[in-house]
Amino acid sequence: MKDEGKDEYALKLQEEVIRESARMVPYCTNELQTAYSELKTLLESESHLCESEEYQTCNVILGEAGVLLAQ
Image (tube, rainbow, N blue to C red; front, top):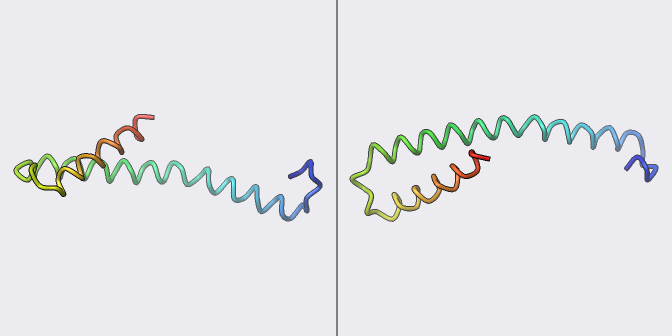
């Protein structure tokens, strides 16, 4: 945008958006980690429901979240 001669105010706004986005990543990662841990604990404590569709769906989601957190 700087090379294109854009307005200085517009540039500052875009830079602030970038900074806010960078601050959100650790927060979102922490929220995902918390939800992952809570879901894992719940699934472990309710293993007698392992045949239910909801339990199996949660297991899939848990696996997907685990992959994201491992990155």
